[in-house]
Amino acid sequence: MKFFEKKLHGKTIYDGKILKLEVDEVELPDGTTSKRECVRHSGGAAVLCVVDGKVLLVKQYRYLYGKEIYEIPAGKLERGEDPLIAAARELKEETGMSADLIPYIKLYPTPGYTDEIIHVYLAKNCRGGGNQSLDDGEFLSVCSKPLNEVLSLIESGEICDGKTVAAIYKFVSESN
Amino acid sequence: MKFFEKKLHGKTIYDGKILKLEVDEVELPDGTTSKRECVRHSGGAAVLCVVDGKVLLVKQYRYLYGKEIYEIPAGKLERGEDPLIAAARELKEETGMSADLIPYIKLYPTPGYTDEIIHVYLAKNCRGGGNQSLDDGEFLSVCSKPLNEVLSLIESGEICDGKTVAAIYKFVSESN
Image 1 (cartoon, helix red, strand yellow):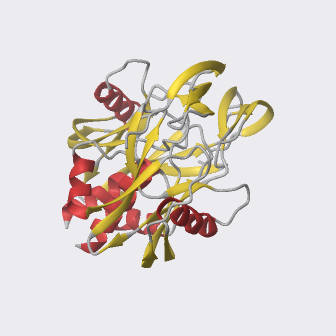
Image 2 (cartoon, helix red, strand yellow):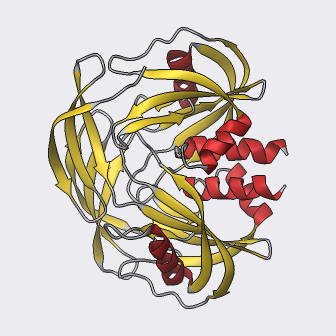
Image 3 (cartoon, one colour):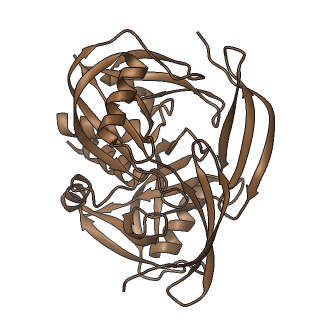
């Protein structure tokens, strides 16, 4: 059986800097109707960079969780931007590094209410580093942690960021 | 250096079935102010169930991506609900299965704009199966796929769901 939901009509509730919220009325497979709360997002790009067994991480205050969290370098795509360009830009801005970037994982972070796609790249031949050039209002610190320590921080629940966890476990699963 | 963003005031833009959208004005570490677009969500629970080398998956139409996608069984927490109870309920409703559930991964799916936490459990001693008891307006099919096939579907980009990808790679990384 093939499932499908047909849009009947929609309404834009909010159109902001990071996201747009639309609420659509849809027709379900059984002919009944329902509402879909849709966060529209331009997408994200992230970079897993492991050099000499150490993972490049940024530590950033995340208002939604009320604390600083560790993540691999990442950022939002400009509308229509090539994710590879965005990944290289964010890596450079956040850490000062450049690298050759290889497509690694494509993620739907939480498919019940957002259309965001996060494109994760694996960095090869990392070079440079040191000078950040952050956006206005962006504050973060950069660090490198041994892979084993990063795994421990995931196990203990201190590192929870979805793209980071997925990328690290993929890397470990392929290193064994 | 410790980063912090102080809430100055906030406004509820939308309060729906799945999510609430708030826009807060915050004070940044340098004393300037900025807006934070905040999707408030009650959280999610998911179950990785691997029996005889096969992964239990549900295939569900996801309106935001306009197609059916594979995910491990999962659902939304009722407000304040214990994630373990929610995981057991969703597993039962979506697949008819029961199991002993062990905490496996805690995920922040996309920390830039949602406060959702997804609690992933690993199923042990799976039993039952067959009869779904889905919510009104919920349509999905259940299948089991060999772990190697699931990995191929992740590699090819056909399986992108974040919690599913993270759980599968963790499982593989620990099986090697």
